[in-house]
Amino acid sequence: MSFDMKPLSRSFYVRYTIDVAKDLLGKLLVRRFSDGSYVAGVIVEVEAYRGEDDPASHAYRGLTSRNKVMFGKPGVAYVYFTYGMYHCLNIVTEPEGVPAAVLIRAVEPVFGIDIMMKFRGAKDVRNLTNGPGKLTMAFNITRELNGVDMTKNDVLFVTNYDKYRDFEIESSPRIGIKVGLDKPWRFYIKGNPYVSKTRIK
DNA sequence: CACTAGATTTTCT
DNA sequence: GAAAATCTAGTGG
Image (cartoon, rainbow, N blue to C red; front, side, top):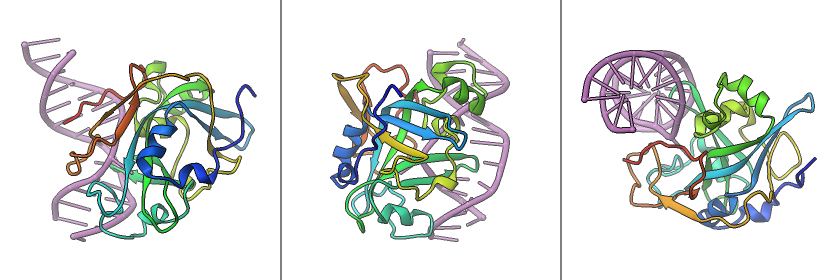
């Protein structure tokens, strides 16, 4: 393997969500399949969601069957289904009992690009994983992975990668929400061509 | 390039 | 019953 297969530890995720979100930029998201193949991409865009103080969060109105993993162990995948046809991938943060997570909005494809193309049915690499619904499709991430522990070297995890060492982080309001727009909790690598182009309202 | 409408179904009110 | 942490195809400039 040309990258470190050691997943980020639980302690990485047990911190203030905004800090975890920024620190996830430049890391490698890895998805392994049962036949031994894998796909991976550099995380280039994320959004932070918290609990009580964040009206845009699924956890704002308390625990439900959908959002319960947000209240659980940090480092666990929170995958939900939305708009009747898309999935979104989040990673739970902060201590157990505190609802918070980081939404992975876009990655830059690195390994297994041919596999991603098949899952997406797309031809242009630029359009493969530049959005939360697109990257879950390319990585074949569905609700089956909701609750998966990402601190183990398993089907889904994040690890260090050294493609980008020095980069500038830009921030903006989060995308696709109607409340909580006062919080600049979307973070992305400045100038990276794989950041989603969705405009901010 | 900018903007709009339509898809599709789970989840919560 | 309405809205949803989205995407694509289609129209018009």
